[in-house]
Structures are given as C-alpha cells and as structure tokens.
Amino acid sequence: MVMSVLEEMRIRSLGVIDDAVVELSPGFTAVTGETGAGKTMVVTSLGLLMGGRADAALVRIGAKSAVVEGRISVPDGASAIVRAEEAGAELDDGTLLISRTVSAEGRSRAHLGGRSVPVGLLAELADDLVAVHGQTDQQGLLKLSRQRQALDRYAGDAVAVPLAKYSGAYRRLRAITTELDQITTRARERAQEADMLRFGLDEIAGVEPRAGEDVELAAEAERLGHAEALASAATVAHAALAGNPEDPEGIDATTLVAGAHRALEAVRSHDAALGGLAGRIGEIGILLGDVAGELAGYADDLDADPLRLAAVEERRAALTALTRKYGEDVGAVLTWAEQSAARLLELDGDDDRIGELTAERDALRAELGGLAQALTDARTEAAERFAAAVTAELASLAMPHARVSFEIRQSEDPEGVEVGGRAVSYGPAGCDEVELLLAPHPGAPPRPIAKGASGGELSRVMLAVEVVFAGTDPVPTYLFDEVDAGVGGKAAVEIGRRLAKLARSAQVVVVTHLPQVAAFADRQLLVEKTNDGSVTRSGVKVLEGEERIRELSRMLAGQEDSETARAHAEELLATARADG
Image 1 (cartoon, rainbow, N blue to C red):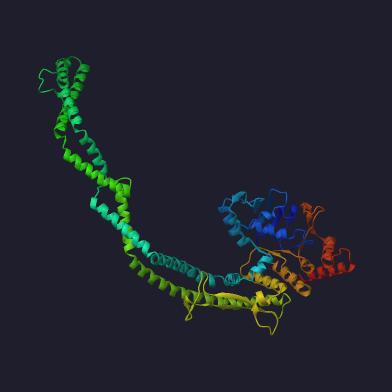
Image 2: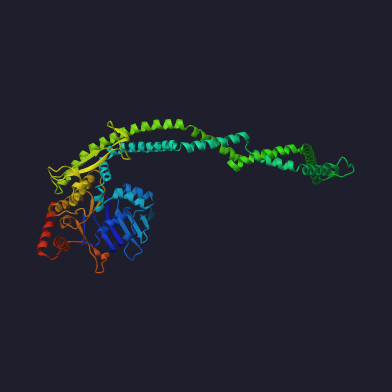
C-alpha cells in the first residue's frame, strides 16, 4: 500500500539550529546527538508544521523569525490531498510543501502548497499524516480525559455513532436548560418589558394611525395655511387664461389663441405647413380651456376653513407624539407596533413555553440516559479488547508480567441523568470516567498509571498504546521524542525491536539517547553543534558504516574510540540486523 512519507525538513533559526536540513526516509529513522545538540528541535519543527502552538521563545536569539519547511509525499486521492486542494494548495511533483514561520514577536504564518492558509488547516491535516509524541504526551496520558479519548479512538464507530447521537441530545438539552433559566430567572424583567409594550400598543391603538397619514396631513396643512394666497393665484391665473367677467373688454389668452386659430384656418387649404400650425394652435386652445376649467374648480373647492386647519394640526401633533417614541415616521411606528405585538405574545406565553420546555427537557434527560448507557456498554466492551492488546504489546516491551485494565465508573449526582437506576453526573462525552490501570507484576493491585507507573513504564505504556492504534487507526508517520526515557538494558532493546516492527507498516522517526534503540533503525541521523554552539546545514548528517559505529560507541560509553564500546556497538547492530 502506498503511504505518505515525510521526506525532508529544513529548519532555520529555531532554537540552537541556525540552518539545517533533515533528510528522512521510509522505515525507522533514529535521531541522535549529545545532550543540548538540538535533537528535540526536530520534534518541535514537525509540531510546528502540523499546526502546533507557536512560541516566540523558539526563535533563535538575534534572528527576526524562525522558519520550518517540510516536504511530504502523499498518494493521490488521500484525504489530506483533497483537503489541501480545496484550500488552493498545489502539489510539487507528487509532494506537498508545508512551511511555518514564527516571528520574534510571536506572530505565526502558514503556507501549504504555495498558498497562505490558516494554521488550523495544518492541524486538520496532521490527524491524517503524522502522530507526534513527546514527553508532554506521556504526561497527557495521565489525564483521565485523554485516557477516555484514547479508548474512544480505539473503539471506532462502536462508540463514535452513539457518541454523535448523545452529543446532539446533550447540546439540545443545554440549550433548553439555558432558555428555561432565562425565562424563570428573568421573570421580573420580562414582566416589566410586557407592561412597557402594552402601554405603547395601547397608546398607538388610541391614535389609530394610518400608513402615510403623516405625509398626507403635512400636505393638507401646508395647503390650508396658505389658502388665501392659493385662491388669489388661481383666480388671477384663470382670468389671464379665460377672461374676467367683470372686465368684458379685457383680453385673455383663450381669446387670443382662438383668433390666431381662426386666421390660419381660413387659409390652411393653400399650404399644408400652415395647416399643421393651425392644428397645433387648436390643441393649445383646447389645453388652455382645460387648465382654465381646473383653475376655476380649484378656486371653488379650496377650503379655507380655520376649523379644519386646527383639526389637521391637532392630528399631526398626536402622530408626532408617537413618532417621538416609536419611530421616525408613521410607517416605522406601525412596524414597531407589529413587532411589539409579536413579542408581547411571546412574553405572555411564558407559562405555556415553560411547560413545553420542561416536558422536552425531561424527555431529553431520559433519552440522554439511554444514550449514556449505550456509550458505557460500548466502552466497556472496547476496554476489554484494548486492555488485552496493550497488555500483549507490553509483553514484547520487556514487561511480560504487566497487566493493563480500564476502570469505567460514574459519579452519583442528584441533578444528573438516570443510568442503570442511578442518577449520575454527565457531560458532553457521556457519564463515564475512564481510568487506565496498570499492575506491573503478579500480585500487584491495578493502580492508576499516574500512581503506579515509573517514567520508563509510562514510556512503554504509551508506545504500546500507539502500536495498538497503528493496527486499528494508523497514520503514515510516527515521531517519538524520548519514548525510551527512564528505560535501559533489555527493555531498551525490546523498545528498539518494537519500533522497528512498527516501521514495517509506517514511517517511524525517533529522537533517542539509547544506543539499544538507535541500533534497530534503518537510518541514523546525527545532530551536532559547531564550535559556536549552533547547528548548521552540515550539522545533521546520515551515519553509515564506521561513523555509525563511532556514534553508537559514544552513546554506550561516552567514548567513540573505546574498543569495548565498539565491540558492543557492533554486537548491537548485528543483533538488530538478525532480528530484522
């Protein structure tokens, strides 16, 4: 099966590393070097590439920023490729280029396939591409929440399906509970709001405004306030157009136009052009007559009644009182009234709403209890298989008598949900407290790994857990930092052997100080400082042949040229090759 492979990382201005290239390959790669040489920066760099938290303290002193670039070959159709292409990333000859920059001020930028992307996208891809494990991950395994997550991850759909249903019901129950609390605890405020709305609605209902009424009344008030001037202007205009009965000798526009029309009509048969002008003058005459008639009617209909003007102003004052409180104009006031009426129905329906929500809450609590029981059953079944698998792995890691088990329990809570006839506390992931127990030897009672496991045992438990995951939920690349902490002798050899076995189906990169582990690697990288205390491009190199024996000798005895150490190093390499 073609799998993703982390091919190369370039690290610049990160910690003690000035500028170095880490060339990786499929299989098992061991990264070694003296304490403080910068081996852990390899883990830190990959963590940054996979969306880890940026820290300005990582930037090398005197540098403006730290940059990590990685090249990962990803097979066509992989989910990581699909997600990257959706973000606009481009592949470079079948490989995905990832870069992360951290400034000395702590700002962080990420690029994927030449395209700037959110750092969160890198974290999404990490789930499918790389599993990074450092000493902090060992400590994380001590947390009960992480132990439950590990069990759920192992169980797969058997837990994921009921957990998804449970989570949906849990979120709905939280929303209903919140709404109920708001209704009941804010009853006084809601009652005051209802009273205010009723007062406003009653005030508006008392005035009974119509849409657009304020505009109509403003126009009418303007007309009534200037009635005399309007009537005078209409009368003068009418006299100019149609004549004044009191001045028979006066000349008006209608008479003049009529005379012009008669003059042209008399000769229009002799010239078509003149006939056209005669027709247009006739139209003017008709128009003048119509306007004169309307002016006469306007003057006759104009109401100059002061009582009507007073009524209009009074009505406008009533509308203005509403617009000062409820809207810019009558239309806005009517909108406020419509919305307020709906809100008042909602507030007045609190009692009914409380009853509905209470019934739904009780039903959801009962449903949640059933789903929580299903989760407990699924976890209990998976826990037996998971514990057996981890125990078997520990046997191959020089802990043949160790036994791992899970304790799945619930805490009683009168306010909780009913599971198995008991009211127990619940949360977003169910009602279960999951704890990983370890009995390191026969006769020893199972104890929480936080209390019953030494540093070396905890390292092996974590490795065993990851190896079990590799068989059920694999990722292409595993990177371990000091997974052999607190381990030595035969146990270290067994860890090296188990990592080599894991590397048959995945890429494994291990930062180690133990020669027993490094000897099992297919490829060994040495990180070394220059005289000025930095790691340069030439400071990360592949060890082969004599160089690898010298490094293993140094790791064994602190002396590269010790004959005894050399013999032991050669024996370790021979044992590892024979085992492979």
